Image 1 (tube, rainbow, N blue to C red):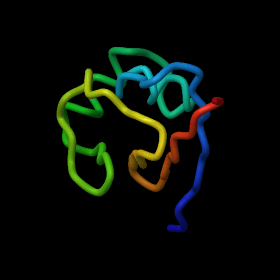
Image 2 (image 1 turned 120 degrees about the vertical axis):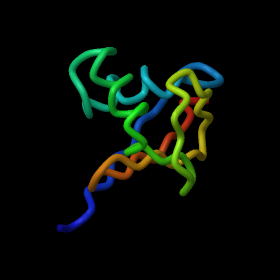
Image 3 (image 1 turned 30 degrees about the vertical axis):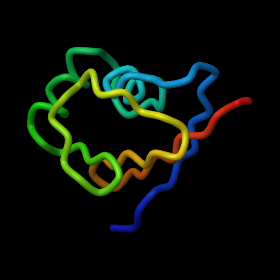
Image 4 (image 1 turned 90 degrees about the horizontal axis):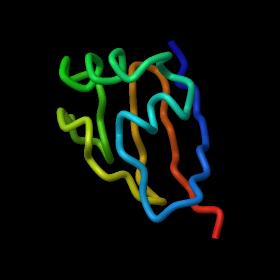
Length: 75
């Protein structure tokens, strides 16, 4: 299955991981985002992350299943 690449631009210094998953459209609710993170299917910069409140900064890459999200800054 081919990877899908998404770019998400944030307007703040960082975004929390669960909020990013919702903002990028990878899940509908915060509860679902929490489940994904707790199940260990979310990676940040190549490492599995189980902290839903982890701060994600511009330049970070978040991977869920076949989706790879590149975070950029609007500034």
